[in-house]
Image (cartoon, rainbow, N blue to C red; front, side, top):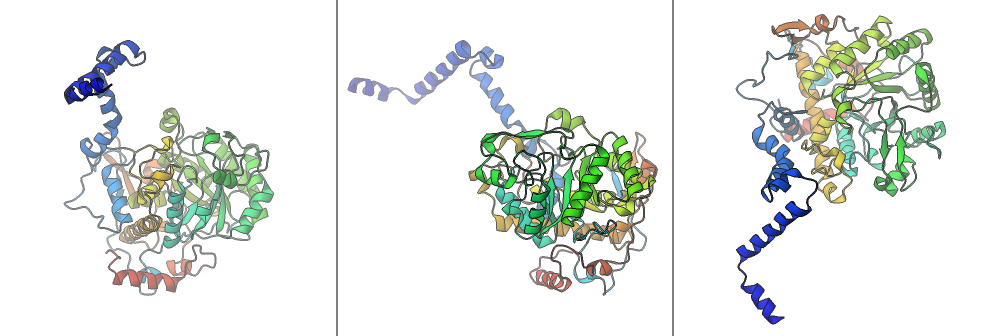
Length: 538
């Protein structure tokens, strides 16, 4: 035995390396039945697979230029990160965008910008931009709701996002007076840390389902009564990432906490079918919405991607004839991406937001019912210029998802579906989640929303308006076609937005249904304190 150990100790290190490589080569040639490259090129072939695995990271940090990546390029991510950290998010030496590319957005500024008078809430609070419309106002819901922020968090569920990510977003929304959409995973404790909540459910009815997986009116009424922060309810028909496709939550991913929140059995696969079982057809949808609104007193809306337009025409016709229907409609663009899906769905099914929203809005305008509905846009609208375009087209609110994720640390690793998100945002891995400091990330989310609203408001004032709801289709131009022609939105989509009734921001600040626990005096004190700490940027 001693002689063997003595022999091994005398073997030089390079011989061990050669021995290891020999073992790898033998394995590649004689035992590898799956990979042709490593079989034909033993040892060296492994380098190819290593480079392939780290290729996305190399391109993101070294190869790609500032405007090259998708879904969000480096400049876009940098603006979000700087805004969230309340750092300088300006650009120097002019734009590096190709301003002649198709669909480039031009905002038509006014010769004389809007002057903010001293009695205007924005004179002392440059972050206050509430919704111009009242959710549930037309249908006289018992508890109507006016969102205090025109920019809010879109539907992302606990389960898809980590507990720390959800709590960070919720606390940040509370600080910024935004609402937080729960996503279809139910109302978790992490949604109850300060913000207004829009309770969202889909075909799985998670959080409001009975033992058989069917929708339970009794449970949704109890949820609303027990949680006063729930200010509206959203019924998901489809989402931009995978419209018309259901899903399966594997039993292995269902923890005791998730089972309790979603009201599902522990350890068993749970199906989210493509279709709703609580209603059938467009008429059934309207009746379903009305029954929930009557039982809870809250505004009730729907969320959907846009494809075939016949059902939208039918919905508008029923709403016009009956005076019933959803209080708000969220149009999700096909470019939406917080839900993992097959590439065939993500790349090809449903229209992008720009086209889908225009088609749906024209239908409701034709039936003269736009004033009854709060229109919400979602789908890569988390930047001031894109939001201004959305308001010009008829949107009343903008929901953001991936941009909100980036504000709390998402690095666009695109590992959301693997449970290996390196930033801890979209994973249930306890170790990876620990990288999220809730107190720090919530402040970052809060600054992202505040700086977003401030920049959007400055853009609004530059166009001569007091509130983004006053934007018209003639205030935004798009480059179109190979000849780099410019057309207004009205010329491009052949409609004009319906005027939104608006008196003043001061009048909105006095609305008794204003959400977010907003108090004008406290908000002004907060801004004044931020100025002293040099945290308000001009």
